[in-house]
Amino acid sequence: MQKLAILIIIEPGLLELQARLLIDSIHRYLMPKLDVDVFTFSPRKGRKPTDKTIKYLNQHVKAHHNEDLNQSYDFFPLANGLFASKFFEQQYSGYDHVLLTDTDTVFLECLPENVIENKTVFVSPADNKGVGSKGPEDVNDSFWVDMFNLFELPLPEPSIETTVRTETIRPYHNSGFVLVNNIPGFFTQWFFDFEKLMESEIRPDFVGRDGTNFGFFEQLVLSITTARHPEKVRYFPKAINYPVPFHPFLQKKGEETPLGDLVHIHYHKWFQHPGFLDHVTSDEEKQSEQYKWLKERLPLQPEIDGPFKC
Image 1: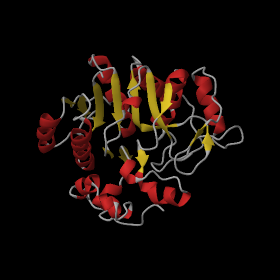
Image 2: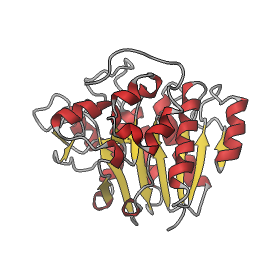
Image 3: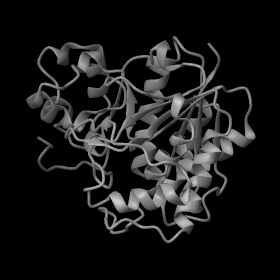
């Protein structure tokens, strides 16, 4: 197999701790079986890792980039990954497989060979509909019509199911774990699609938790970039990019993936909660090597409390 590059964003504070956990998991679960290089990026001015983290990165990753790549959208941290992946694609050669992952994720097993498939892009459906659309009667659909018209692409029919609260929607993907196999220029195109949508006047009648109506644009526009390669789009199995905060909810629906079968999980803020890992594991799962490995490293700081998702 050809070499896999994994791209991770790091900014000071919590993301440093999340990145170290993620990178440690890559070394433990991926590198013994796959040829992997890790690249880290801190794309915004004034938001660089501490010297302690830089020392760790010098020992554990192929290269760390401190260049101020995200100057145009410094106010929008979710754009960091697009700037970083475009930079990587234009600066590095020899990597036919490139994975852009959110920092608040961790590997528990090695990626299976069947996702390292030539000329494909692997994504996961969005966890919940949110600003997505179920079709013409959906309140968000006029935005989707306008967005696809902007790019002069045909609007896809509702055809995928969200991973948590099951709804059939137009293809709307999670942008926190995207694996591109032998599609040159994919990340650069994703960046330019994002830039075009941001510079347009097209906005949904949807305000996110960040108080803006563009807070999902880097994820929304992934629907545009993947629509340029419809025959190459694949979906990860549920064991990859698994939304572990919703594990109890999925258990009630009978749709959970047993934690012992999980390859990669997306935990969002919940590894900061001292009781979270025990909340989502059974007595049997607490005997696993993965549980014990995580238990030694959690909670991340600063700690949080409050009720879990259920």
